[in-house]
Length: 135
Image (cartoon, rainbow, N blue to C red; front, side, top):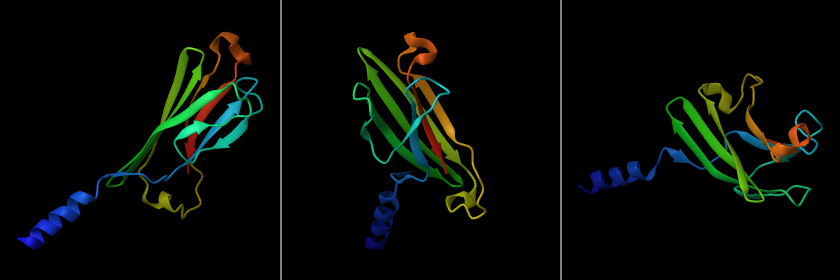
């Protein structure tokens, strides 16, 4: 009876949700608009994201990882506040290739990405933020 209880506790103590980063994450910040020179900001933890321009208020949230059989999913959300308007973008990276965890074949993998203009009324001159994940 004790053995069965210990086995059940052991099995339920491991969740399919994990907190490790299997992918690399970064923000590309183009101060002069999409397609112009950009600054790369690597991401390591949830919380406030620091930019050279102190007027920009952004934070990272909703860090999650899920592993199921041969499928790895990982997601993060970038939220920026501009006055009374809040912009957000979520990116989900997925992988179902066993060798990619260690990249044994030295393959290049495309980045999953999504972005938005911080000040849409400025048109092409609006600062542009892009959240990316890659191996």
